[in-house]
Image 1 (cartoon, helix red, strand yellow):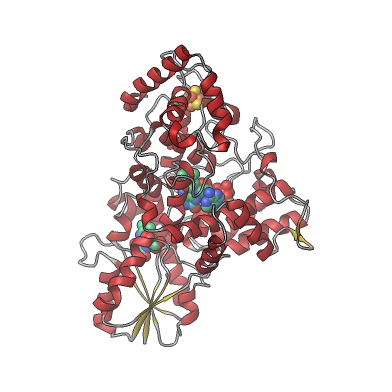
Image 2: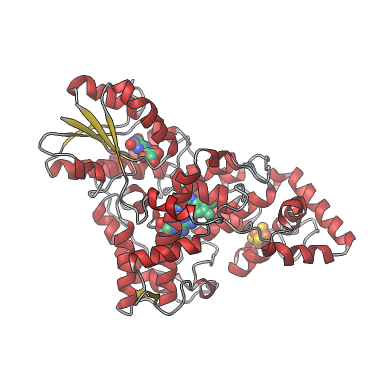
Length: 509
Ligand code: FAD
Ligand code: DLZ
Ligand code: SF4
């Protein structure tokens, strides 16, 4: 008899572990444990989502005839880690071997590879996680061919391999990428998709109660939980997105609107990442919508690129570059994260909105993460470790394999350009262009040095000035630096001084 341990982000019926085991003899192990629930202060909704999906998944497996040993969360239990749990079960059942699908995080994978077999006294077989389009081996081979690992080239290879939106070996529409058409603001039209709600069952209610009792000290609200917790519900969420939001996903992909949290985004990432949905079925559904004339090419290509391109690419980068990657800090940023990242209490309307949404829903869409909270962290020189911890804690979709490259690489440029060809630094003007936040703000987006000037404006130039030696030779930054050179010295001086004053009082913005 063998054990198969299934982790909280492996809740797929197609999981390699299940394919390799025999339900007539082998035993599936699953456990809610303190170590996984508290290695960062996960948002209560993230914990509730994972526990509820785990419990529903275990119930489904049981109904299919699998033998399951499942531990519900218990802070008083001596079993506080996944290894404790397997050890405990091994004392009872004396399995011949343990099977586990490759973990999504380096931290846990290292523990498994280095210690588990010795501690348990049985072989531990680690299976490849085949829920992705690109294996880690294939990514390594791709990466070995290029000096700079740009997502766009990887994406084209994945398009050819998968055949999505391809005709006779060429991209449909003759262009690989329709990003330039995907930058419209949203001013009320077309109407936003209706919201989708799910009826909670007894499992959901038990988990909500548990999380309220045990994790109320973690940042974020639980009362506003509205995630799907079963595969059936996740499929409804996918169908809802394809029907109501996908047609406008492209046009308004980068837009931000005061009080509107989802716009035309899918909110599917937590389901993709915990295993409820496969990336293939999501891309298939989007492609079908295009082929049936339900959604335009710019929307469908943009959406498929996020999953087939970005999602696979960041995973490849993570496993290629870890563990050194997590320590990188190319811009030597070291300021502490201001308290408003955890509370949303700031006079900056864009930051307050992005954090409010985050705390309320364990969600923020990509542009809020990249160009608001991320951009502010970059411009203010916040410590990458603290920033990464924050992003890993507060989102329902956050696992290190996807969070770290996005935060450390794409947002903070701490990898000196492995992910991004230039830092995504922007002044308040970008936020003003893509949103209506500035209308609701205490600060004035049009000025740089007055007491009420938008902090992003002076911080932007201060950032460029501070890192000029590293960045001004970058061809993609040349025009910006030329603009900076042309600025009258007194103006430059005033901007830099104003920024210094803001940085000295970062908590008060
Ligand atoms: P949509 O806009 O509807 O996009 C569709 C899907 O594409 C997403 O569900 C997601 O699976 C995928 N996707 C889109 N962009 C990316 C990307 N850059 N990297 C990987 N996948 C992508 N995504 C996570 O899944 N987990 C994270 O922990 C995470 N941390 C991030 C941290 C920062 C600083 C930034 C800038 C981005 C991060 N992202 C992360 C990527 C992206 O912001 C989220 O995937 C997206 O906002 C999820 O919302 P959605 O499902 O509505 O996405
Ligand atoms: C994120 C998470 C949480 C909060 N709790 C558990 C848990 O109790 N049991 C479990 O098996 N997995 C949990 N997870 C997900 C794991 O942290 C995740 O599987 C690893 O970090 C690998 O990606
Ligand atoms: Fe954000 Fe500046 Fe606009 Fe205020 S004025 S919302 S701080 S960009």
